[in-house]
Image (cartoon, rainbow, N blue to C red; front, side):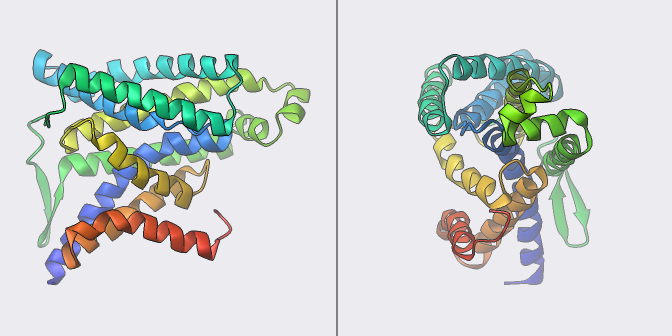
Length: 282
């Protein structure tokens, strides 16, 4: 394999890792701080992608303006879903089962409205790329990675450098002690749930721009991003991005150097090795 092909594969993997990290960010925060394994996060992201596709192809709305509709709507939907969890006192294990059912419902809704056919949002930026030496960097994928990096840094700074973030971490660690110091854990949980769903909306916009859409892809992405969340560590925004890049680069190089059919095995192979190794952040 030539060095040019290796470099191009590595760049493609880094950019793909940005999408993985962006998808993993909301799930990582929800799981780590709310103790809710929200598998419907993936379905929400793809619903956001289809809404972006619909607004762009039928009404001619640019994806950046679609985000101004999709992201706030998902914030409200995330709080509404969390209200159900609070009302029925859904625990960590039950949340995985409940949200898996919600995922199936959303997938069925997508298939009912848009059918199971593959769809692609063609934008004027799809073919744009930057040339660096002998390799090319797609503009849309680069924008997705930049957005993922900015959101991961902002989430890290928010959790570690602000009173609100410290309150969230305190409530997640020991809600009773946090309440004794005047922290309203329930109110904070609604805010965080809304933000996690909004992150799914942001991911959906970029999925619409960079990927071919099909309802069946939801399950295909769940496994990979689930591995990214575990490898990156719960409630670790920068870890989610780093793990996404690790998986993305590994998959891309495997496809280029070995065989594309082996790529789906990469994420779980890395996950198994790390679980056996048991580094401190897992």
